[in-house]
Image 1 (tube, one colour):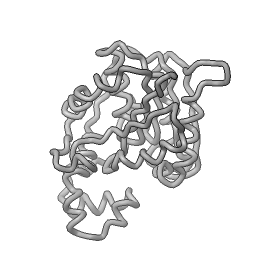
Image 2 (spheres, rainbow, N blue to C red):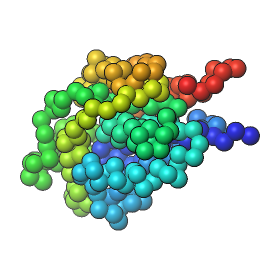
Image 3 (cartoon, rainbow, N blue to C red):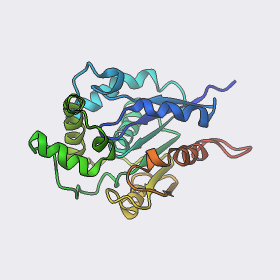
Length: 239
């Protein structure tokens, strides 16, 4: 029996990668969902959150050798899209492993500049207030103690997001699928379509209904889109 494809799943800023576990029953036994939890999040809450890209990528490098022993695909939403992309580049450059497919969601192509106003330097009250304007999840968290607990994680994630600096490198050769919400004000469809520049392989854009959090609101449609791209056609092979 062929071993299942590994699908590494990266969360958005402030998110918990364990939410991807619910994808498993929809994807079936031929795809193994591997939530890529960041330090300071979820079950890693006792670890210091990482706000520098070199530290985030160093953490990934310690985990990849145990995951790259079979075919591998990557998915990430928002900040997670950048993490999935950089992880794919590490797999190619340092392990000689070309992913089966890279799936990026809810984020402009990595070479495009940041157009949102940076939040990381704001004082805590203003930072939380401005973030609440962007995040329904944060607006729902009214417990001040829980907000205080989340603050270091949120600052680390948004610092990483806002300080990401794309570096030119060899393009991927694997297929890339970019998912975008048709009402996402954080990442427009043309910005998401620009991911096509980062592979010499096939590219497709999947448009889902919703705003930036379509990944939560329409998660079953999102996981169906992922599954369709990862399952080989009848009589064919993955790719």
